[in-house]
Length: 143
Image (cartoon, rainbow, N blue to C red; front, side):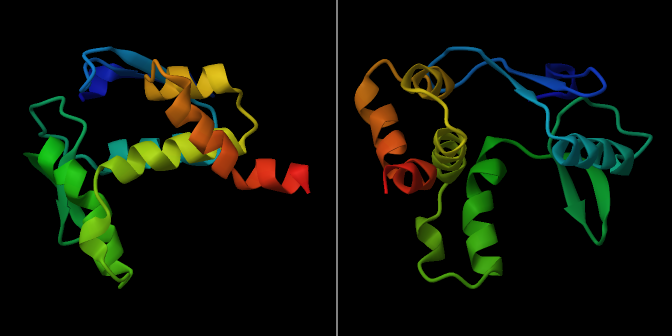
């Protein structure tokens, strides 16, 4: 991912993920003001002398450096977060947690099956149906 993959339209961020494990480009939008503000704060922390466009850069000693990080560091973030939170079995939190969480949040936001399938890039409905069935919001509506 690079900064060029994110377009700031003021009240919307358009994020293009150019390639993935499935070899399918994906685009999504961020419309929540809190998250847009966090992205802008992150951009403001980047060093002025940064000579690359990589999105992920190392943060250490309360400042951003120019050293980029890639997929392996990103994939280990859930484990690092779980360790920081002192959760048991922190090694079980993998990069896949981001995908599961995004699908769960989408299901909780009342998204339909087609939307969840498109978001996750699933051809089969089985996986997407599981997120709908496990959705806390759906369970509240059923009761």
